[in-house]
Image 1 (cartoon, helix red, strand yellow):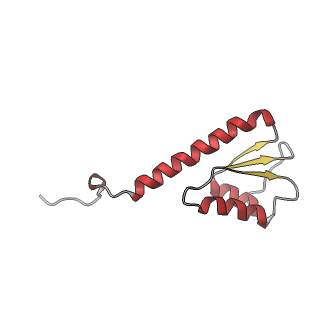
Image 2 (spheres, rainbow, N blue to C red; image 1 turned 120 degrees about the vertical axis):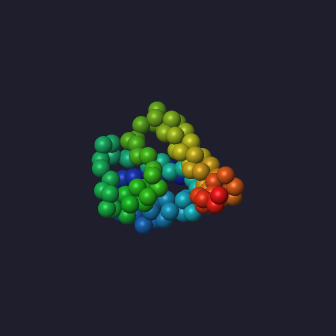
Image 3 (cartoon, rainbow, N blue to C red; image 1 turned 135 degrees about the horizontal axis):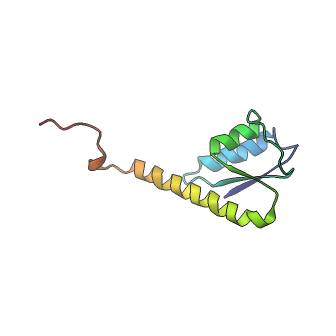
Length: 103
């Protein structure tokens, strides 16, 4: 699980974007959760961090400690679903062939 705190100084941080990208490169990627320190502020989609969060499919929430637990659970479940899909795609299966058999 990777949690990134997003404030005015981190919107264009290459280090924060790197952390997000590295979290996705793992054999079993981390779930990503972004927490805005300035409630309701927008994260520009063209910012370095905005692009990385969008690529990661990260949930972005405001600073509200009472919501952190549920948000972390959702991020973990999302990454588990992705991992199961990736594992399924790697497994060869006779029934999953797209080729037509000749009669």
